[in-house]
Image 1: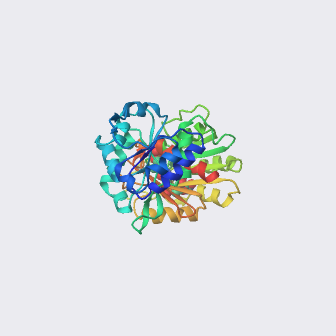
Image 2: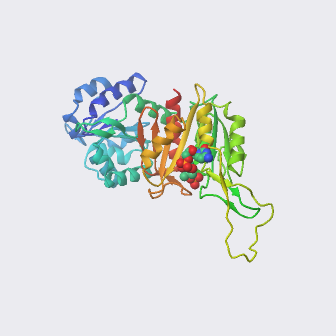
Image 3: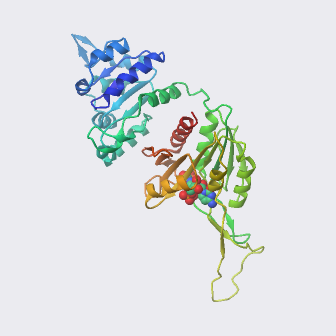
Length: 392
Ligand code: PMT
């Protein structure tokens, strides 16, 4: 466990205690800045191991290569802005960085910093770099910060970190065993005539990754999929193919009452042509272009929110282009969802078609977790982790 210079270092004391209590053998590495916040004596007492700080101590060399090989997991909590930037660029000027750069085990970090630093483009860039290097990032929370300001940047709570670590160390555990999940994904096509339709750019990738992640976590998954070339990797996912919003609604209604989890990642057309032509609509020399009368489609997520029973967890999405957070919070409430995943088309690499996405998850209690740009598979894992936390 690495501890860097941040006021959140006080929470690391509890994390060490929880890890030891859970049966882990813990070796702590402190940066010199972290010693101003928490004493090595406390950490060595709780970890039952000497605390390491320097590449060489009392003429003995700290074998950073072996430390990085010894551990099953390296956790850096808190991760300061400074150490984050060293991780992104490979600066190796202390024992913690030497161990990180020579580690062969998975690495998880728990950032902690003031909101302005957290939101700075350099920090966002550095987070994306380390995420691409396969470092798992446990997102910051919202609340009172060391500066006295209120905002994003609080280190995750030690209990949450422990839960995430346990899942990472035991990926074969099936926390959703026995739960039934329904996922909607892809676009809907609303026919104008046998040749043309009203649709959108959804590829289905996001929802399919969620179906796979739920399946991996042990859930029994039904994926209601609009027209898409993509397919889930997990052969156990039951795929129901549909084309229109009305068909998606019927497929959802047929199973929703029998599920504990509903994730609505589909981009459903809000409107459809009132009457689809049975034959191809021809240009007939008429100079006036034809008019298509639209009628409203059922709001599937809203229906499920209204029908929700105790013990069901409902996750909605919001794809926004403006006033993102306000619109997401409005949808969370109006559709009676438990979690709302916001993605914005303003963020490069987010939204339709890409293999990446950048999301924030909002909970009913006003909690918010924002993530850097991640692969859609990683985003799916984070959403499933949030569902597991919600259900427990
Ligand atoms: O499929 P990809 O290419 O991977 O792209 C992923 C995605 C961008 C489609 C996905 O991440 C996403 O944002 N999905 C929701 C898109 C959307 O239609 O959002 P919305 O803000 O319009 O809808 C809000 C919520 O209500 C969504 O959960 C939606 O599924 C649901 N909805 C909307 C309309 C409707 N008639 N019925 C619904 O259930």
